[in-house]
Image 1 (cartoon, rainbow, N blue to C red):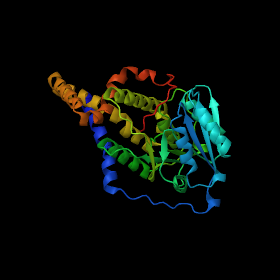
Image 2 (tube, helix red, strand yellow; image 1 turned 180 degrees about the vertical axis):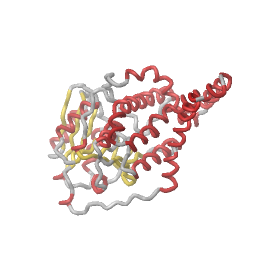
Image 3 (cartoon, one colour; image 1 turned 90 degrees about the vertical axis):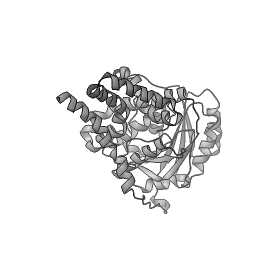
Image 4 (cartoon, rainbow, N blue to C red; image 1 turned 30 degrees about the vertical axis):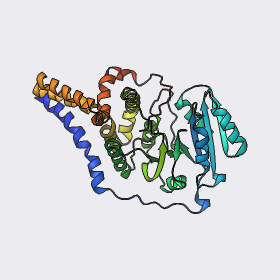
Length: 351
C-alpha cells in the first residue's frame, strides 16, 4: 500500500505543478517597461554571435544588429566562427573592414559551447547578448528594453506560428518570469550581465538552459520580456527528423538538469520546483502514468493505454504534442551517460 501511495503521488505531482500555467492565464498582467532615453544611462553591450557555416544568414544577422537603436560607441558585435568551412569568415571580414565595432574571431572546430566561452571572454561589455546567426531581432529598441528591466538575465519571445504546445510553454515561462525565475531561454536572445556568465562545459548541449539556470544559482533575476520578439526560420521537418531533433533537445535538457539540480536545490528551492514541473516531470509524465496504470489496473489496461497512445501518434495534430513525453522512453537507458559525454555539435532547435 505504501508503494502504491508513493507512486500515485508521483502521478499527481506533475498535474498539480502544471497548474502554474493556469494561474498565469488567470492572473496575467502586462509587463511595464520604462525605456532608457538618455544615452549616458546606457551601458556598453557586446552582441555575441556564435556561427558555424552560416554564409546564408550571417550578413542579414550583422545588418540586423547594426540597425538596432543603440549608441554605436556603446555597442560591439563579435562573431565567432567555429571552424566554418564556407564563406562565413570572408563575409565577416568585409563587415569588420567597414565597421569599427564589428569584430570576428576564428577558432578551430570545438563546438558551440567552446565558441560562446571564447566570445564572452573577448567581450568588453557590462552586458552581453548571445544570439544565434539564423535569427533576427524584430524590435529596434530591444537592447534598451532588455537593459531597462534591470534584471540579470532577459530572454525574448520567438515569432513561432501559434499552436497549443508553444502557447502553453510560453505561458509557463511567463509565470516563472513573474517570480524572476525564468528557467529556459532560446538561442535567439540571451541578454545577461557579464558577471553572471558561467563558462559552459564543452559537452553541454542545452546552452539556453544552462545559462539561465547558472544565473539563478548565483542568486540572479531571470525574466522573459513580453515586448521583445525575435524571428527564426520556420523549418518544416518530417516526423522522423522532428523526433530526432526533439530527442537531442530533451537529452540536452536532462543533461543540464542533472548537472545543476543539486546546486539549484541548495541555492533556490522555488526554481528547483519550477524545474521539476516545467522540465523533468513533464518529460516523464507519460512514463509515470503508464506505471500507475500497470500497478493499479493490471497488464490488460496497461496495453490498452499503450495502444491508445499509439493511435494518437498516428493522428498528425496530436503526435507533435505528445512527442516530448514519448522520447524519454528511448532515452532512459542512456541517462547515466548524459553528464560527461562530449556533445560538441550544434543544437539549433529553439526552446
